[in-house]
Length: 314
Image 1 (cartoon, one colour):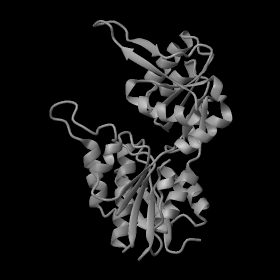
Image 2: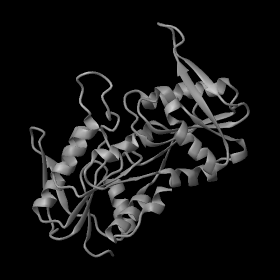
Image 3: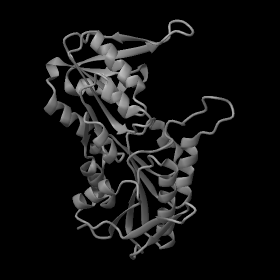
Image 4: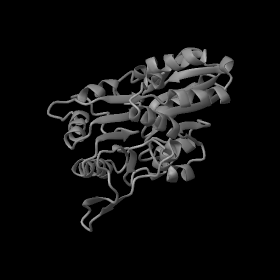
């Protein structure tokens, strides 16, 4: 058991936190996280943390604002209880898509959230597959941005024949990610180009690359409403793909996403558990959820021991 290492969590993803604690061989920290009748969050630490190296595991997924507030309050409680070092472990970083001004007079929310996390006393951040890697620069504290690719690649290798596999980027922005996966899997790559030819006309999905007779695997970092992914899947089938599957790190799956996936030609949706998916699993039989507890646990162990974690970025 690592000495002086403690792991706490809020109400967001207790299941993943327990798995990480089991990997580390420690008990999950004893804290009470509740709400007042008016909705205010309340946190109480029920054990001594003075001088400890503390990690707070809390993805800021739905309900985003409640989970973010729990993370901030737990961190503040730890700081006031004289914890030695506090690391925020955020498997899914909410507000990451608002990383720049795309319109006049709008906030850069990803930067504001980074400021909040640092302001309450966080010493370090550990996260997985940031939507935009440059968000690391929004923090004035160290940020370790892990990649779920080792876990995803291991599963893909066991499931698919590389000779019949083509990795597909659902848009131009994901080409670099798709190319990296294709290189490691030694398979081909394709791109779905979505465009509206004329005003008031439906978007056209053009497939760049040969997918005929191949098993197509659509790759993205996150799936939110699943509109683009399911449309891309239909286009791939029309171009002759024998089977279409999808893989992503963060399964946000908001709104009608599950309904779209169930009705789509996608045969399997491979995701990780950076976001809790208990109810979504029941609603969508196509979901295959991979556990990232070992990845997070190994990173936490190395940070605690002050050893390198660069090999985990592969």
